[in-house]
Structures are given as structure tokens and as C-alpha cells.
Image 1 (cartoon, rainbow, N blue to C red):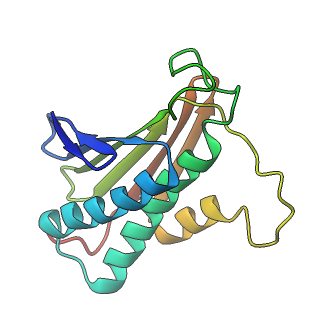
Image 2: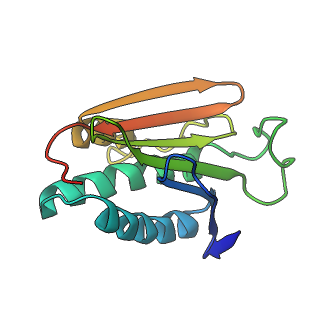
Length: 155
């Protein structure tokens, strides 16, 4: 196992990227840099499309870091409240159709931001706007966000 900042990479049978990221803002930022490097080495896209992909995936990871592991809301499959932050699992792969699919999964329970700021709460809308397709599945054992890009990917 190779440690990459606050993330560690695991072998992915699909040949894609498989990372576990600590659910902190700092780790999310470091993940963004690592994901951008993986993307550059994996697909050929124009600068605008690359920026959209990196931002959408980062937003999904940052949302999980901010919202999934509120004190006292961690599921039984994660560390007890008051210990280390939980983990965010990220898998990215190219499909047979040469589409890019990225799944961001946490094991926490969603907490809402109590802030009434008009600049908050746009993460899922941003993810939807920047990806060709996105799905969010949430339950008592965590949330999974799957993002897909179907067009303009060169492999």
C-alpha cells in the first residue's frame, strides 16, 4: 500500500484509480491534485473539459468531507464519534464505451449546513452541471455519488 498525503491508493482490478481519502478539507485538496494528475495520464481532453471533470469530482469529495461525518452521526461501520475523521472512497475508471465514471462513497450520515449563507448549498447542482450524468444514493450507511462523462474523451 502506497500512502499519498492523506489518501492511499489500492489496486483496482479495472485498471482505474482507487483511493481512500481522509474526510478532511486538507485531504480533499490534496486529492484534487492527485486526481488531476491521474486524469492527465489517463484521458486526453481539452482544458475546459479537464477543468470541469476535476472540479466536479473535487466537489463530490469536498461535500463528503464536510457533510458526511458530523459529530455523533457516523454509522456503525466507521470510527466512533470523537475519533479520526471517516474515509471517503474514490474509484475512477474508463468504461468499455470509453466514458469516464467516478464514484465517491462515504460511510457517514449526511448533515446539513445550518448556515443561512446564500453562497452555500450549490455543490450537487454544480456536480450535475459539470458532468454528463450524476446519481446520488444516500442511506443510513453512507452516500454514494457517481459522475459520468460520455463525450469528448480521448483514451
